[in-house]
Length: 216
Image (cartoon, rainbow, N blue to C red; front, side, top):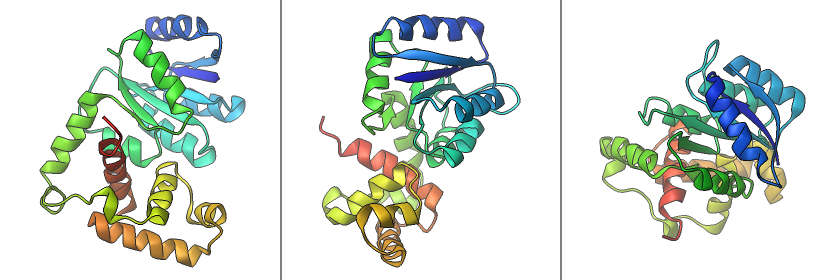
């Protein structure tokens, strides 16, 4: 796995690099000290994974994630932060981030999360899941009744998962061998069940939804 580390703290960058390069199946191909440098490096080197700090100079990790995912949606981005405040969570996930972890994570868990992320599993620290759930519980039209897995058809679930990986409607149509119009109809129905018409909000809800339905 080719990995880029983006963090403005040299100690953190060096520490992560040492940890990762101890693994036989992982290699650090670049390090960046700000969000803009991370974006440019990712577009040039095309890594498998970017470990992205949230708070960095020039542009933060959330904006860097947006830029990278716009051009290279296949790149996996795991966001790392010392802060578990919810001001970044929704935006980061809506831009296609594949995971959100606290820097206090244990080394073994971090390595496991990196490996799991390549299997298209959304990686979320339990404290962050709690933060999102708490925020959603304060929204009346969501807290009253979140949909259950059985409320969605197999095709809707398939499309929802592709939405989480930042597939465009055209890409979804090609992957499912259906028309874009049919995809739009499915997404409209998904929005209705999620009680929203906003894609950004829908992506946030779907991240929580699929986390909740994973086997305990």
